[in-house]
Image (cartoon, rainbow, N blue to C red; front, side, top):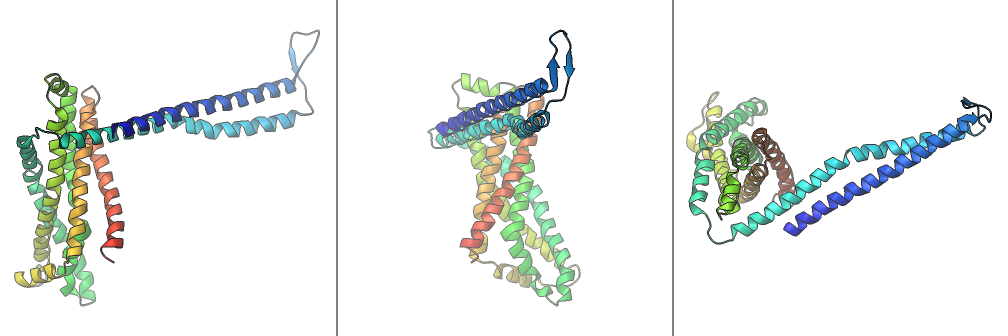
Length: 335
């Protein structure tokens, strides 16, 4: 993993040097064209120190060649402007790969911090349960209220329990809970580790022969990986209660009948892919929060920047991973 990260950084540096050489070549082409155009447009009188412009038979041709050179130079100049951005992205990818390799090495190293792992599970899981409880209840409640008028039109209101259970368990529940946890957990981890980085607490741990990767990073990533699926399952169960309440606002369905229909519509192929992708959601949330906080720059504003970028990056990766998971499950599970 560290060798791969270093290789990606080297590729970024070579890419920047290549773009700089192309920029110099294009600048030389344009400069040469301008000199030829100037020489073709003026004539030096032997008895005068001044330059007088006179027409030249090849003036139009040289002007067209210069314009072509400028058109060639303009796209490459735009590429050169983005070269530093690409170089930064490649360097960031290399750092993330090295950080991931360090995480796996320290995960299986002796001296695992079980006390800190349990404490992080408490903070990430138990402290997030009220937020997940409210979100799951409102999710099932609103989905039922929005679907009830349409299904009544076709006389299919009896399918509401199965519709709510399948849609929530398969897709809506895992994604919404992961996005909620991205805002709460990734930001808190990024801000906490970022403040420790700025105040040099991580450097103090290194000096005192402690392992900050094993104590700070491994425990938080594993706690996120474990607790996000648990929170998602709880939210799925609470959403069924919300759907039951929403269904009984305009009608009456017994509690036993509603849950028999809701659970009877679910299959093992609905539950397993949903739980599996929440594991990857939790890993992505914990990894990005730890990475952004651990690599915070010096300065107080970097703490807020680390928390902000952690939320944005974690939310984006949740959506990307969900798109990949939907494609895989549609091919291997639902067919």
